[in-house]
Length: 415
Ligand SMILES: Cc1ncc(COP(=O)(O)O)c(C=O)c1O
Image (cartoon, rainbow, N blue to C red; front, side, top):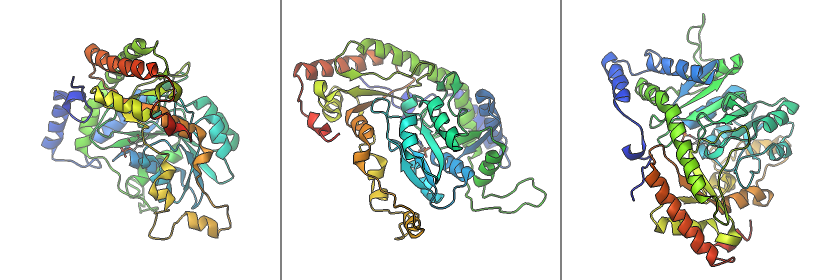
């Protein structure tokens, strides 16, 4: 069976609404947001839905994260705590702002950072905590906020995968100090590339607006380029598509939640599988559907994923494969020329050297060794859900009947 894919029209929700707004933009002849109306209106519409004071549209999720870090304005060698299980677009901008990424371990089932793992990493140089709501399942925001408040540190929520997720009745993105979102092709709503940031904090709002537009003080009595900043503006064409997509967002999320609930109910009795669920008071919006496989019952994620693929169900065993800090960027310190900055600057200032040791991340190792990420999509029908559930059932029954110590179980021996 061919499953809808978010890479093309089969799994995306584009129609005459996007076309009508695009036509308006083309007819207006204004494709740039500083002169047009679409991006401006989009920002107001998102602010209204989220009940937040300020929304700034930017050119990607990476740009959204960068804009958030720039709003916090760390000093060189300050530390930002985040997760090692995320897209590099959430981490690289820390280095561009001169800050050093510090990684907190994740819970092996949700693969989210926890209040405890964050607390362990706080030092006097910590300038921000980034809570990434992975796969659409919210972090324990109450706990993380409490740790942050104890130290007077702002919290940035990375909601790239978590549109309209709620945590204790509040939309993620509005709970911390700044929320970041991505509008890349595979997200709950998309403009191909794009993103936005949100905040209720006036000082952050001003820096976010300035940073994403070369720090030029538009509308000020004596405008200037006030500080080092980039052009991260969204175009009017993207703004038009985003507005049409925004109008469909609630429906997209509800459809994903309904089919995911049906899928869960078809698999609940299976041995060795932990299915995703949100904590009490929170909602999962199923950007993806992560299965956690018990290696003692089903072998490792790789074997389980390979068997699923043989049955025509695409999946990503081990998600990003390895913790972000094991990528060459970090292992070789490939940052600015051959300088190794800001790591080397930190050393030169007589501060402790920052090193990343996989052994200190048992939750991350276990989580990545066990997770098999299934794509999820608002266009899935009961037939699609039944087909995927049938394949998962077959694989689970086959592997579990072979007993423990299966091929792939060894892949977690170190985890
Ligand atoms: C959690 C998270 N943060 C940040 C990003 C970066 O977003 P973009 O690819 O739009 O730059 C992504 C992208 O997939 C993501 O999943």
